[in-house]
Length: 227
Image (cartoon, rainbow, N blue to C red):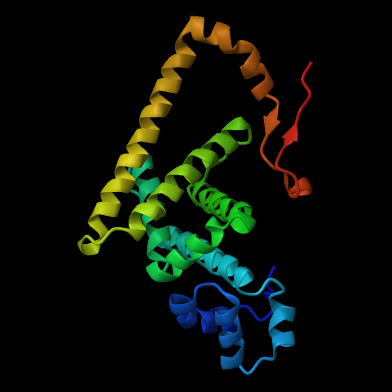
């Protein structure tokens, strides 16, 4: 991970180069040169070079989204509208060409898992800023669902040339509506006695799943063995 003790200057320096050279070793070297850093000094701060800075750029976008959501007046919005607004604010925090180059980087097989983790982190940030308190299997399903939505939205946005990206905003609304419909179907299914009888054992297993705990944040979650 990048050295965050001197957080922003190297990231800021690489951004003008990313549009032309991507999140590459060439862009990283140019950024270091702009700051008068030697290769050794730059790599000491970012052992994985431009990839570390790409991850830092994504984290910066998450932080900006959180700040914008905390400052926004959401009182007149339905919950689905708040989710859609958070996604829109997250997109607005990024430069499209820089994000496009990041999507290219994290589509590479050697970086795919890192890219998936970043999208999961964005979904987690959105649910957290919305006050999500789930601590069971729903913690995972909410973030998995929103990760899929956010990933699709980013790809749509990258190809959207409508004025003010209104087509992207409509796409976000449609995807969130789809998710809300799925949740309604699930709620009705849970009320069906035949369905609950068939899925009872699975529900019992799922009831033991818990969200990650602060004491074990290096693990994906924990399992409570219920007799």
